[in-house]
Length: 428
Ligand code: EPZ
Image (cartoon, rainbow, N blue to C red):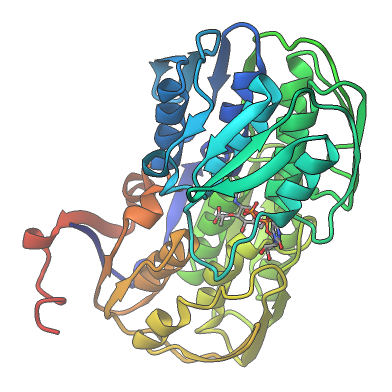
């Protein structure tokens, strides 16, 4: 098993290039199944979730060719299977997008329930509601989600909760359906807009992506295209928070600053100075961070995927901060790990009260999920002494070259195998 070993206490300084967005890539790649000819997808992040989706596409019968580390050519013309097995689906949430994409392509999909981060119950009732509105029958058979229909027609769907996954899945199923589909109370995340742009570049007719009403006029055919995925809002936010948390001075490049507005607003409240360029953002923080209140919400609110990282910064802020989780039922599982490092956090339901301490101490901790893992890295960078982080496979799902990127900013972080680690875990 691999771990990260971090010697904390160094201020991050320098420039880091942000990779393509995980949550856009994992929607765009399954969408290639809807094309009648090959697609080239550029600016993909080098992360294990992307590899897993590409493996799925191959298993379904696509030809997948890596043109370089971040560009892949996919020829879906030979796809002959509509089954995504449990072994293929187990590690990623985005496997559910194969339901919409295969339904759109083959009018039939059988997909194992998705894996991914554990935030309590992760239902797909809104996805199913959408497929049914388009005329599909959806059932659970032998532990697999089965969706099928003779033909897909347009339909109106009002989402009872703003769901990124349901919005994406309904778009995928509707894009080649006969007639017009309207999704109301749709999610507005940047990756929804990116998927719509990709599908439109293939010949789809999608309007309103980025607003809460998306209208999809079905088309007969989608053609292959070349498309570059947007930069990762959450990776960008993670480096901004890490810079502030270490009282550093960091410029992130290859970003869309508009996507970072809610994150930047909160960082400014903590006392950071932020300078925005066209495609870059510089942040620095002098002195101790100030307390603030954060409530996570669907876009354009503060992203839930930045909540653990922000809580970690606030752990050493001056004063008491309050974080309210407005998206997931159970996204404070990392707090136990943070308190091992000396943070003072009280969780009551969906609210965490963080009493800022002067400093964090190193400790052996775990990445309980992807963003929790990023938070543990930030905590390790802030803490005095050596922190070891276990279960880093969660982090590898979503952060490209994280050791190399933090090292280039001056951090002392290494990836080691169990036998090379300093024994912090063995002592416990
Ligand atoms: C996406 O998950 C992201 N994953 C998550 O990021 C992110 O936390 C989440 O959106 C919210 O922004 C990907 O894009 C691959 P949702 P998703 O459907 O689509 C409820 C990361 O760290 N809900 O928007 O699964 C649900 O329980 C990952 O990169 C239903 O009730 O999230 C939750 O409370 C982790 N019924 C809320 O909606 C449904 O059918 C939002 O979930 C679907 C969702």
